[in-house]
Image (cartoon, rainbow over all chains, first blue to last red; front, side, top):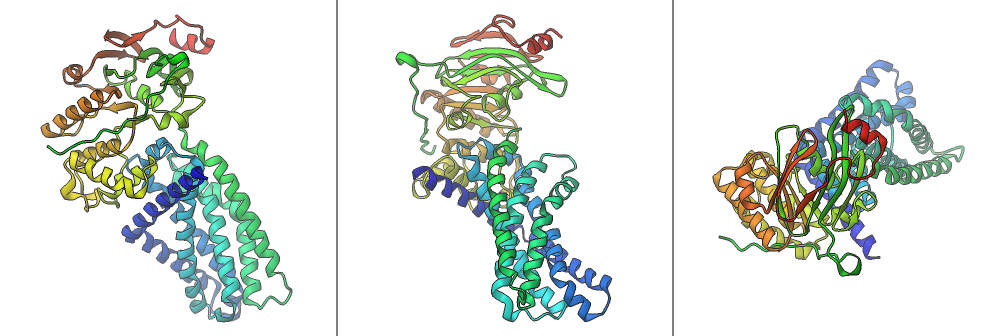
Length: 229
Length: 259
């Protein structure tokens, strides 16, 4: 029990420090959100002015923008460990490595949630989609997607942070693993926006939950090895 | 001069009540790619001793300290800290061996107080008991006045002082200091000397790597000189070494050492 409380306070301290760094280094976090919004705008240009087509594509585009913005977010959360050699110090604290992973993943999930929460209204406005009625299942999809993405992203960012070509390696390694998450999140979003006529929303959300749990377990189990040089 | 409390990890008794050595390595070797940074170091340091680790650039001082701190694993050889097998139980060792590296390991967007407070939590202090410990440490390293400033604005010397504050909130039994005087002004160097003295008086074992041979030798009980990954010379009390080949070891290590 005591060990659990200690792990919890370690995880919260790490997440809190990351959140503070993100909020204070506003330009970086802000530009990520702008970048994702511009991606959405460009998708809109690429697909042309047909508003029905845009509305159909919107859930997929929303999640692609979240993935692109998320890649930058995950990389940045680990870059702040690398800037002054803090990653090695983090590994040397007498704490359970799973608690370190939990803290980094918690910060990542919070950042992803903010990103998703800000992009959702952007999509609604750009592609003229009424999200009002479907907000609860949409929120569930965004929350579950954010957790899953952060769970994988934290592990891979920990792996690539010491690599020389980390900017390329993170997307290269991570995107294939994200594919099932992307699929389930897009399908859940489509179902939520369409009023779920086929009753498939529940299964897609369940798939997201299963994916999140698996990725969190795998991430917590492997992150300790990544901290070893 | 501000009051400075030194926190120390409780001593561990070995089998039958004997005191285990603070550091005991057998034929430690570490390869980076195909070059050997350490080529077989057998070193025993008694508890409570201060050891100056000397040698030219590339002699393996930093690699040895990083292995002792459990930051990297040796390619060959064994290592125990306070009688704990550091390769089998690195987490136990991390609560006792504290490392000051070249990198100061701060978070730029946190303040001078938030950085050691984070470290205090990681070292196991509760939120309420940690704060006075952090404040005292900041006073000791003379950064009280800038406690609310972000570390991003700090000079190299101030960052180093803040790294010392982090060590003050730890509870070490073994301190591993890599060039603690580097990038500090005269006053800062005197502060390092004073702190080393305080840790020494508190019974902490200290291994300090430095190019300032005279400065650290005057603080130390013993000196160890490394040259191309091997112990070249040992002098003083409380430290002993064994020549390469004195103990059985893997063939690969033999091949490498005899290169």
